[in-house]
Length: 104
Image (tube, rainbow, N blue to C red):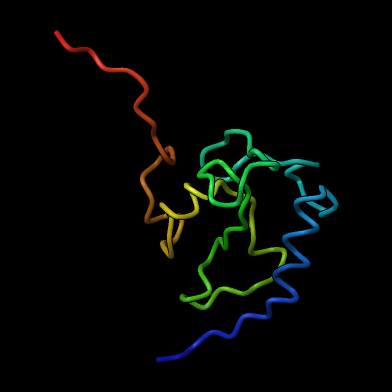
């Protein structure tokens, strides 16, 4: 089994660049979640499911790199749901939230 070493200095630098809106990115200054398209609460507590995290398009565990071209902004909850899956393994349309029910 191969282990992937993470450079936490580089990871933290990339996280800070995206959080501050300084990344040369088509996502804009404060980008929405890459997976669901909803706004990210950049001021939320880091454990909040709507808070900002970095997601790797190709998981590090599957040979992805810790570079700006492989990372995207995501909600903590969306990132957790994606886990180490590739994008083509996910359901089309991303994450679906049930907001109302009919009880009759």
